[in-house]
Image (tube, rainbow, N blue to C red; front, side, top):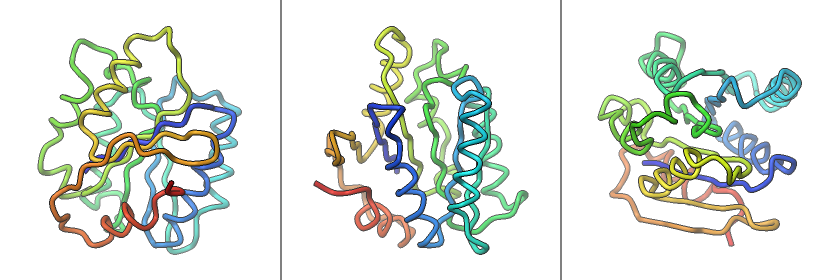
Length: 191
């Protein structure tokens, strides 16, 4: 199941911090995947400091920088297989996936994500995409966001101080109880 969150402003991304805090307190390990090209050195250091404050001894937030979608998927697959240590309750959160190099190629981003297959969903019953800011000059970014909207079961957009539901499809019963809890109880502020 895919969850997409659109946040219109880069300057007011505090909602992500609150969401990560809630996840960690419930024993769910967020795995943040950030495109190398979309974060400056200063922003990367600030993100690292924030993550170190949110993490607990039992549940650490993971942060990885990726150049491509395929590189990010390889990292997550290694994590899911237990080779890098596993809590069994990881939530991959792709931040600005439309900025990854190969998500701008001729292949549709939605097709690439859906092509991950059953192995991915067995490791990660829920995958989250967070798109921050908007750049109307980038056609590839707009196309990628459309793909995310189409494949996601739940799409929320930050409007003012609340999250507005743009799309909600009830998924068939998920195999993991923690994902149901996450979607319908831990979501950022409901309208």
